[in-house]
Image 1 (cartoon, each protein chain N blue to C red):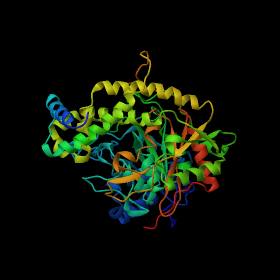
Image 2 (image 1 turned 180 degrees about the vertical axis):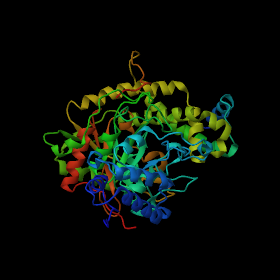
Image 3 (image 1 turned 60 degrees about the vertical axis):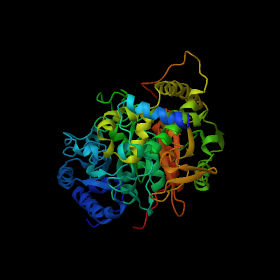
Image 4 (image 1 turned 120 degrees about the vertical axis):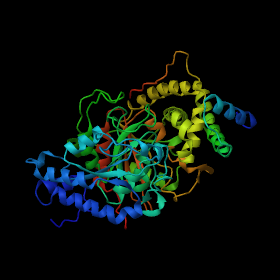
Length: 462
Length: 60
């Protein structure tokens, strides 16, 4: 009963709970102790759910067949745009704090708990998810466990800090333009953004519905796969959720990369990348024996179109709040949304037309390869508060530009696993991109990289 | 669309959309709008056939 659980994976915890080496209650209490110790520094959590978590843990401990619970006793937390029964779904905002408490948990929370996991709290995020920094004017910035003066990345910044800091082994995030992959990269952990339409978004506060995805962050590929398998399944309450059979991935991880054809994105995805980003990409490519360069056509335009759709759809979502409560927004978010509201609709339609064209061209690439590698972020974690960085000799604002390499991918809903490379002093991520619905391939490749030691979540000193 | 015409556009759009626009916000709104319109122009200049259809309900 005296195991050190502080860096255990969800899979390891579930095994220990199932075999009686520890209890779910012990793992949950242990997580709360770590949260109490480190959250004042990391600022990852905005709420903790002690009573329900301890009750849930006791129920897991009382279950007859704990072997059938793949996440038995594994503590997890969720970005605070997910509904948690009894709490207002704040989505990083001040405005939503006036909302009534959610009447029930989001379906993804329900599904994870049905698999034995235990919710321990809600996580900090950039306001209304319009963010790549992990900073929040109302709750303060989440802090990178590898250097607490640096950004976690956003908008799932609390998710990155909580997992990379060892507070929980698993966290839910959301990804509209890169908000899982960016914090995964900057915090040195694994992230899964599944295919658009795969995981239900019901019970979560939206941002840009035609681009929004939910997914998760963890310190191992197996934890991504176990939780992903638990969360799959159709849900009519999400208009974009596709009615598709559950396709489990956990049992496929050991298959290795076999004869998978793995290419490396060139051109746009190398331009502007820092030596660290390119070094990590080349390191992963070398480990996989990936030597074929591939051009994702019109990636810069894809990013531009995603930018336009995001600005305008986001503005439409918040139009009434902008009219009535403009002073209650984070000014940086408000000014972007106000600008988005003023973009002529002709440009939005053009962006959606381009989106379909681009999708067809990129899907063609998967006739030549099974996966494409690309940097996750142009650089490792900037300093908290840093406003600009220099990419390819051009000074650019940090906040909208950390997603340069993630936006062209989520724009057409492709599944991606971000894997961490343990560079010193700071880690950085690489994207493994596959065709729609082939999360299994991306997870297999990530798992193979982990087995080779080419990808790993480094443990910070806190 | 840069310079004074964009300032005029922003003021007019805010009025038409019934959006509050305090004077001290205007520079940041303009900066954001300039970037978004630049991206929009990049997309719009890309020639596609008249038959190309949008993907408002996207399916991967």
